[in-house]
Image (cartoon, rainbow over all chains, first blue to last red; front, side):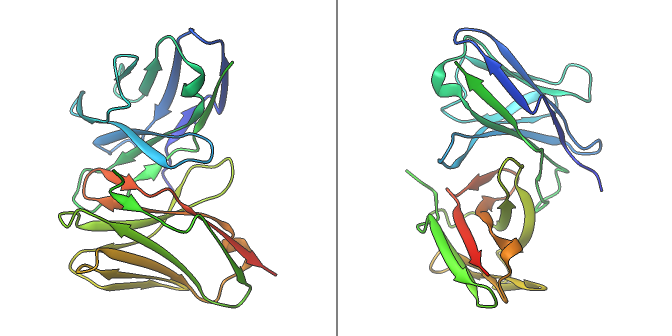
Length: 114
Length: 109
């Protein structure tokens, strides 16, 4: 069964450092997403990406965050100048783009900012 | 403002009984509804879905009910098994999904 893969599974970083979270979506999917879940809280939408550009983003996704798909396969989330409150599980998801299609999630990257 | 609410953060059910997980949403324009299951340290996995043109969808032990007028959906698991113990998220949308905060289900053996 096709799957979305995320690396690394756990990332520890110093406050103020930049991190890049990587995702390989399912190959024929067209829409890509990043979500995050702070421990004990809800799963929150960060950003959606379609046709090599951001299609929608939440209030959380400010200038500290950026996404790109540099090589047509990897989909990355960059967090600049990390803060303690960025500590969370970050999930990548991809969807075929057909209406009512299921979202496939990766296993997540646990980011710990110390 | 929360567009999707799962008001019960946790639920405990005896093995073999029915588990009912609830989800309320505010936007009547949503037309596709999904349930995801999440085990600790894993990503959410798709469980079952329903579109707005239906009011019920069944897949084995899992049934999702949609009440559009009440903007309410529920997931029924019958019979509940210990392996069903997980966090269940409802997601609503079409291309982009908004998720609830999750309900932690514990099925007691």
